[in-house]
Length: 201
Image (cartoon, rainbow, N blue to C red; front, side, top):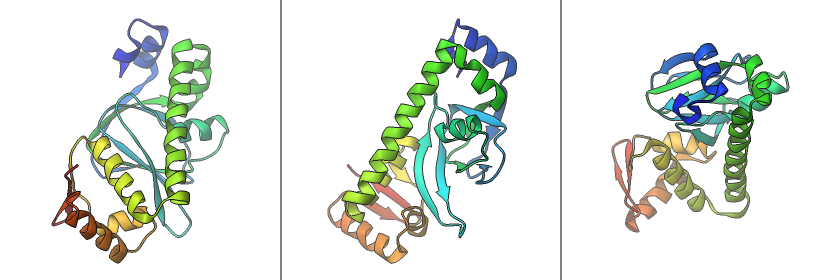
């Protein structure tokens, strides 16, 4: 991560105050309602960010990849609020944890201010895309977008995921997702395996 800010005051500050952490695939990094103590800077792997309601239902928001941080975490800590999201390591990942009190102090560093602004812009664009898909498109478009985004985040065309997991994150029924996936397979868009889906295009 530090190579993005090489030769800057920010780079030295990250080296001094940042806490390196490795996370295993499937590990939960934070849950809704928990206090945010660190802002994560991803240096390797992929983190999936979800919104969860009181009934435990989840909806996918976005992925965090190398060189990115969580805009929702920044927003909550700057407002003095607890976490509003759930974050799970999609793959074995490595992050540098920045204490939340420093994330505000560093806004006087031009590199950090630009980095935060860039991440806000990226996340805002992704969230608008999710909203557009929900509001203006059918479930087949939402499903195709979901698979493509997940494939890009993991840098693989073969996704190890069940139909039920997809249904949970898209707030749909497993049977409906299975029907749509079979239709996509007939159109040679995907190849379905046992608990995996290969994207063909």
